Length: 171
Image 1 (cartoon, helix red, strand yellow):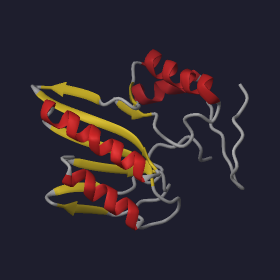
Image 2 (spheres, rainbow, N blue to C red):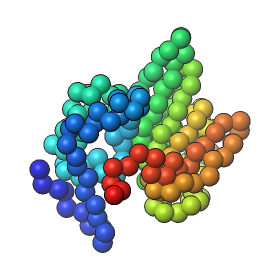
Image 3 (cartoon, rainbow, N blue to C red):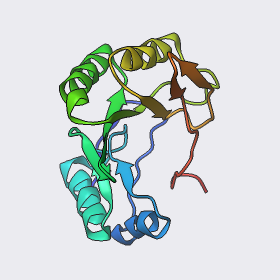
Image 4 (cartoon, one colour):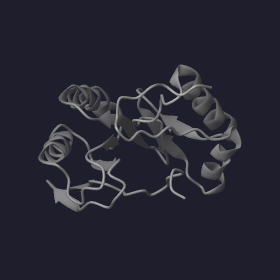
């Protein structure tokens, strides 16, 4: 596979053997997101390889479609999104409104924000509050590679960044 050209001064490309997807299942991680800024580092073929590896490992993955988990008659929708623009935010709000009546809880798991910033940007705070205001029950972010605050907003929880919770790009 050949990496896709990037126009960043510092650019990274991530790719790993398919067998590494088993670490999720072996670690009891049941759902992962493939929505991030590296999903297409190796184009559509690389993305397809990632999805195939997750399927083979028996791991549920979130992409543009909501993931619905049901247990004991409780339905949870997980919306995995990139959050680098107002357009992405507005699409997610539409998805929240479309699915809210079919489930008990809606979780937003977003990939966005500014790397190595220990506080969320005003835009990420605005979007996260907007998700809650439009029906989300929990908002969780990642991308900054550092921990950011947890906020209670309208009796719901926003975790702005999990840091590098599970990240294969570190040595």
